[in-house]
Length: 377
Image 1 (tube, one colour):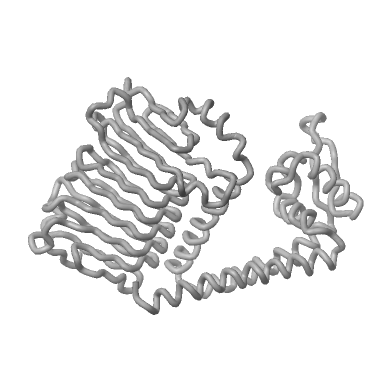
Image 2: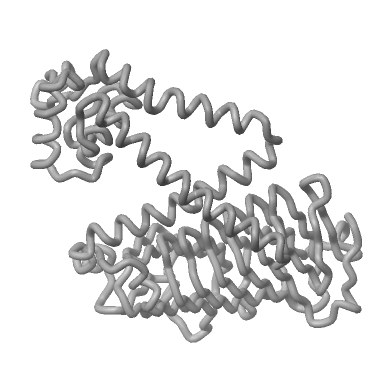
């Protein structure tokens, strides 16, 4: 990575830290001015945006327990910031509604901030706004996964039981499945994926830490539960073997870290790497038909190995950077660049690869770059 890019990344990290501190100071100042505490202010922000919610919805959105939300609502009602009224459609439920004071507080704290932020974004090109959106979305998904894992370690055993995981192993039947789809989400780490022709099942997984697994037909969704200590989830290893008797679609996102995937003995229909995935290495099979590969949303350190002679078109857009295709560095001119191997347009089988939304440090390899030169598309 170029030195100036490293410096920019450091500056972005520094500015994010300063932004969090400035937002914290603003919250403190508004809470002091309106005579509420920070917990109540968080609840009032939710109430301002939604207008009315149930007490349960407010507790879930704010992260408070039922007992804590009752106490907070008592304070908010005494201060004139909330009203509890019967739900006209269900008299057993109670709705929490905003007041004029809530809307005044919300307009000062959130309205002005949103307008100022919008004014900043309107000065940028759509491509730049897309990069910012995808970066923030990827970081948000990562934060949400950490919070969930830290708040609910006790649910790991229940989740494993509900998802059919026996100890640290899991599988699903192949019968009736014509297309497999594997989705790895919510912070999977140190994962290996490979085809295994000896399998009789659709897939088989072995996990150091039992994950949440949902199986719907041929779709297998695996979300590694993060343990109570922050980043402790990174020590857990996982292995997923896929049955090559059916073609597969693969989706990797949500804090993916250190993943090695070997699809050479399988038919790959689609591959997506998104939302904070990092240190991902993939061995691709010979393409069967037009195969789409998408790398976006802050994904970084992604290396794709394709067999020699496989037709390929690669497009870089939306702030993607540090891309090396067949040994040649590519830079997105005017926000977009496209290259392809000779004969791609007429090829029946090939890879259509798109890098966008802040994806960085990307490499696509072939066995012999001299036999498969790239040219501008």
